[in-house]
Length: 300
Image (cartoon, rainbow, N blue to C red; front, side, top):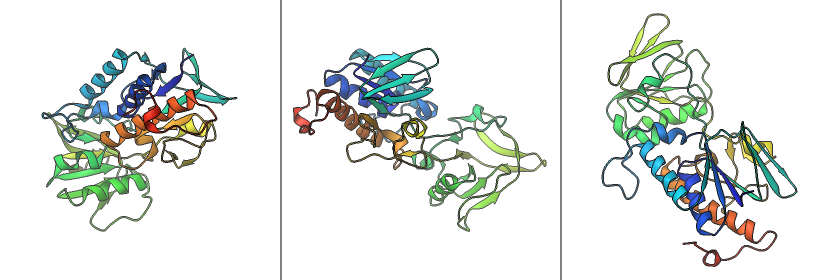
């Protein structure tokens, strides 16, 4: 039995693990992969890196750091989360783990439809975050794949930067109000094409749209499925937390993209650190008023 289970091995999850480990608790990191960050080809807006770093490298560096400090890593998908009498049970396909505190840091839902060519251009013209990568597509023709409010939000984010923005709904009806500057294309997509980088979307009717960038925005930006299993408060797929990253379930904390807001590494790292500290407080002082930050071993 661990003191704290952290679900997710991206920036939020690893930061939570680091601060919990420094607080003297045992931590198990459970994650199948590093999430959307693993697919980011270039990151150049995160503090401390004078040169561009890939998302995969940043994730692997974080995991190595957590393991060096004593975190246990279980590379499996979490399929169930339960809570009974102050103890959480986390289930994966082959393991059942228990702990008095859990940090959810699973990232936002970034669904990828099964369209030919799409996976081939991830990191080479295909992105999952407009605010993260819009800079790389300034003055270019871009598209957003999706039809819901999340897709509209991503399209609006791209408008001030891109030459043109087209929403590709792949046959689905659009949800929400669309600014007139955004073109809506509801044709069903056959494939995405290009050589080294994405260059076009080809439709089933034989037509073609030239694009230099594609942003995936299927569904809702936030995944609270595990929290909902426990009856934790949620807003859509966004997990609702207080200023201390605590959910409405005692001992359950959430950090990073799954809480909504700015989907950036910097925000995820801060929330993860806060969640790790608060999880230590919960484990050490259950039912007692929270201690000042400086009283938590390793804090700061």
